[in-house]
Amino acid sequence: MTKFIFVTGGVVSSLGKGITTAAIAVLLEKRGLRVSIQKLDPYINVDPGTMSPFEHGEVYVTEDGAETDLDLGHYERFSHAPINRYSNATTGGIYSEVIRKERRGDYLGKTVQVIPHITDQIQEAIRQGAQRGTDVAVVEIGGTAGDIESLPFLEAIRQFALKLGKGNVCFVHLTLLPYLSASGEMKTKPTQQSVGKLREIGIQPDILVCRCERPMTEEMRRKISLFCNVAPCDVIQEVDVATTIYEVPLDLKREGLDDALVAHLGLERTQAAPMDDWEDLRRRFAEPEGEVEIAVVGKYIQLHDAYKSIYEALAHGGAAHRRRVRVRKIAAEEVCDRDPAELLAGVDGVLVPGGFGERGLEGKIRAVQWAREQGLPFFGICFGMQAMVIEFARNVAGLEGAHTSEVDPGCAAPVIDLMREQRQVEDKGATMRLGAYPCRILDGTRAAAIYGRDMVLERHRHRWEFNNDYKRPLEDAGLTCSGVYEARGLVEIVELSDRPFFLGVQYHPEYKSKPLEPHPLFAAFVGAAIECRAAAAAPPTSKA
Image (tube, rainbow, N blue to C red; front, top):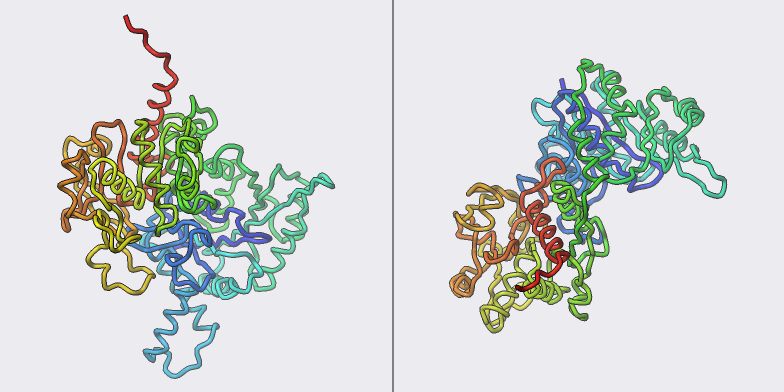
């Protein structure tokens, strides 16, 4: 029988429930348990696919093509849990399904209400999220205790726990111990009030994970235990990490969180496997042998979460080489109005990520041109790959009017054009080319050398594509189309083969990068940046 852990949050948002949830999965997997992870989101959007990145951060795409919350990226990076469309459920999705059933007559004329119909549907979503063969399903509840939007989800998990019985469900509540510099002390009252809100609903937390800037005292632990009705050994501190979020599993392990979870769920007390791989990872981040600086030129650069997976994948690539990656964030619009040399001077590589629409596109194209002319490593992802193609078409192949039809439908040379199957699409939600597709890699190319194999499976999220009508003139000018989706002849990878790393991909490799398993493209890109930095620092050779 699958056991369940429900992770709730209190006091404030952005406490790090997603990272804590992912760390819990790591600790349980180290116990030899099979784990699934799920996020329940209280917003009314069916999924985040139609939201602005400024509103919600990046959209994370699963192998099976679901557009989901960015926390699923944390789940997949940290753990081996299978992540798919059932790993994320929203208020919008729950209500849509209930309304569909009502229209079909499934409720046999009954008045449809939040309780029991909405809460029943939430519980059904929870069961779907628990993958077959799972020992423990970890379920994160979005929002904070007391939010009106979260109430149906909290009521649903209260009912769910009642049905499964004691020992089959564990409630973990993440809360905040704020430090007040004026008084020089941390305060427990917000935690007490947050737990009080849950208890009003009928949920008694089994374990408290307390976020804090500095370690709590034993006196504070006993006070929280007394006022929140939680055993002292189940009051776990989660102190802000010094170097990287990948320290969190190690910190929670030292605090005994895995022992507490195993005890509450009545799981067999198997010996935990050593965390040597995570300790080595921590050292790679904490004790780098050097650093490189990568410029990320993007449309949504003002919000860190908008390119969360990009930044994490760069960090993974750096850790693979024992280097710290410093990211210089540059708004693409700024490159439109200023000299790229002024904004990009001193960087060791340039990355242009995705981002729909006209705003900032010319800045991205100028950044690509500057990197090409300076001989710097360049990596283009999705729209960044398209910007690379447009720049090459204009400035190397000499195709007058080269552009994307997304921005200029009447351009003379639409080297990037709308996919055929997208031309009749009107709805915006979940209608792009989404999920994993196979890509055949051409022998003898830079991409083939990096991947070390001729077939890869990568995730997509786009409507526009490389226009094969211009493949011949672009290849004649020196662009190599090194990866293709064979079923449609769709170009997936382009590169300049005369450079150490100048490559663009239509897909999103950042979604498949893990700290312990860096994506080969990111590892190779950072490696090329390291070599570029070393070459720039080397003294000039004297001529005989």
